[in-house]
Every structure is written in structure tokens, then in C-alpha cells.
Image (cartoon, rainbow, N blue to C red; front, side, top):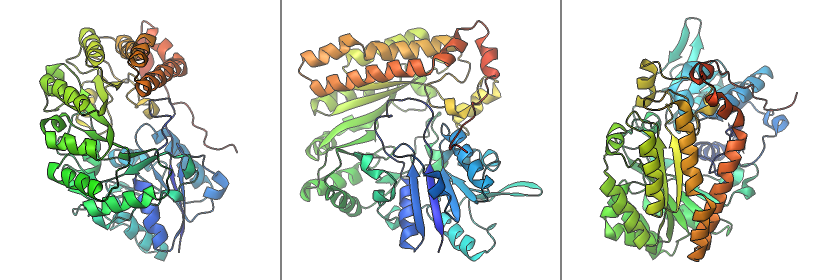
Length: 474
């Protein structure tokens, strides 16, 4: 049996989710299954608790999962462990897109869904067998990097164990319960990396297994909120309704939230079930109110769809976190300001005004790369809060400032006061929190802001080098 350390690094900056400690589901799920097979596991989610480096080094294998913005820190961890002679396996969206880069820091990369291939890897690794036949494995040879084809069979989600979140070091700091009910997305938005990782075919867990997981978690009586982590909770309406009916029937109705698309507003029965099953908040990828931008993003939705969605959700007393993306080639300063006014006029409860981010291997990345418009290669800045490319209809400074100003207006003292005057105290609290995070973000990124203010900021951004990452004092 092996001793395995799992690590999910934290991002370097400040963002709207900083306060909400919640892991992605890959590592806890694989760690749970590894423990069931008899292996000894340690799980460190840095957003939840600090990595005990000395304890983490007591391992036969270190597994690190990373998205793009956490990649520099993931690489620093990997380098540190390998300096101590420990083998490192990496996975997650960023190594899936950029395996050759990840192999500069790790011994192996498992690309794509690794729920099955990881355990094939463990079995062969433990027995000292050859690893080169494993689907989705990337590794180095004397002739260069080899990327094995991805597995053709998609993971059956019902075969996955219920993740034991108590395996996470510091898990008691978590107050939001993450639950996965599906994977995949057929929409393939231009800037999104989901389909590169999980494919374009929806797959679902059975409602019975999901409610069993909720029931088991509720027994702990510690979760403030449940968040269904699916990229689109209502992807299959029949399945979503079946799940919510079962939640209601079994009286397992914690306060919950999920990500949905605007199509949710076209189904009154769906909205009624959401409210009856105790849905309190939804996260909606609204992206833009500019029809040309929506078309460019491949969103398959209109401004009318967006307006109807907001009104219908509010009519069912479900709050909305609206997510918008600024910086498309069809965007101007005016459309950004119009979007900010629209969000306030429609009384969206909370928003994210994000900057278009060319995540590796997405359609947006390949377009901007081919046009020579990507300015920054520091992955820690690929968080949708920094300008890392040259916009078409404005300067990098304008895109940066207009995004920040849109947030400042939305979370202004005036907007906060409006919520409290309507006796919407929770809404007032959320706006106050947004105001504070916005100010902290500007202070944290003052150096980046000064670079954008320079007359030759485009050339300066091209020379911007990643800052060294220190993961543990020597």
C-alpha cells in the first residue's frame, strides 16, 4: 500500500470567492477511493488549510491538481517535492491543456478525466510495472514528451464514491458543501475550458445517490449552504426535476445554490421545484448584453432571454449572481458602461464583471495567439481579473479601469444603502462584502495598475515576468 499526498494549490490573488472555502471535487473523490483501496492519504486544499510540508513529504507519491491561475504555485510545490526525491504526478485543467510545460516540473501528467486512469496508474506504480500504456498519461523520453491518447470511455459518475471531505486537512473551516451531480457541457463557449477537461456530452449521477450524499452530509449539521458544482445544473430538465422532487419527498432540502443557464426561466415547473427544494441562489453566465458579443462567445442566448431569466428568478424569490465577461472584440467602453447600468437597473443581487481570459487551448486563446495579441505569460494573472491580452476597441488600461469602475458602481455605498432601506439585510451584507473585496483587489494589484498607466504599457506587459513563488521556507 502507498502513502499518497494530494495537493490543490491556492491562487495568488484576491477574488469574490476568497471568503468561501471550497475544494474542487477531483482530489477529495480520488483520495476517498484510494483510502478505500487501503492506501494512506493526506489531502491539502490550500484555500481550506495550509500545507504541512514536512508531513506531506512522508509520501511515496505526490499528486497535484491545478487550474491555470494556480499553475505557478503548483509548479513550485512540484519542484520542491522533486528536490527531496519524491515522484510527482500532476493533473487538472491546466496540465491537460499544457502537458509539456507541466512535465518540466512533474514526473508524469494525467490529462482529462482521471477518475479511472489514476487507479490504473497507482496499481502499476505500486507494483513497479511499466506506465507507458495508460490512457491520457504524458511523460518524458529521450526523444521528447509523449502524450498518450485520452481514454475513449467516459467515466460513469455513479461508480465514484461519495467524497469524504473530512480527509481534507482543516476541513472544519469549510461551511459550504460541494456536491457534483453531472459533468460535461455541449455549448462549448469560446472562452471556456470545461469541454477540454470533461467533454461535450452530459453525464449524470442518479438522483438517489445524490440525495443519499446530501442526507449523509446533513447528519453533520455544520453546512451553511450546499453548492451543486455542475457547470449547468439544469442541463437535463427531466433529471433536474426528478432530483428536486426526490429531495422534497425525502425532506432533504438544505439551502442550496447552483450554476444555471438562462433557459431555466423558460420552465415554470422547474422554477417552482427549485424554490420548493430550497434553492436560494443561482449563478448565471449572462456574459454580455451586447448581441454581437453573445454571438461571438457562442452563448446561444439573447438580451430578451437574459431579462426574462432575471425577472422570473426574482419572482420565485431566488437570488441571482450574474457573471459578465468584458473585453470581446465586439465590446467598447460604452457597452461595458451599459452593462453596468443594466445590472443595477435589473436589480441583480450580486455580479462578477470579469475580464476575458484566454485560457490555454480554448478557442479564445488560439485566436488571440494567432493574432499576436497575448501580452502576458504569467499564469497567476489568468484569473479573469487582469488584462493579459491587447483588446481590439480600447487600451488595456481602459479595459482594466472600466471593469473596476463597473464593480465599484455596482457595489457602491449608494447601492448598499438601497438594499438596507428595502430591509434586504442579506443583500446589503453581500453588497458590503463586494465593496470591500473590490477595494482590496485594487490595493493588491496596485503595481499592475501602475504598469497599465504607462504610455508603453503593451510593451511593458510583454516583458512582465512571473514572480517567484515560495511554498515553504527552507
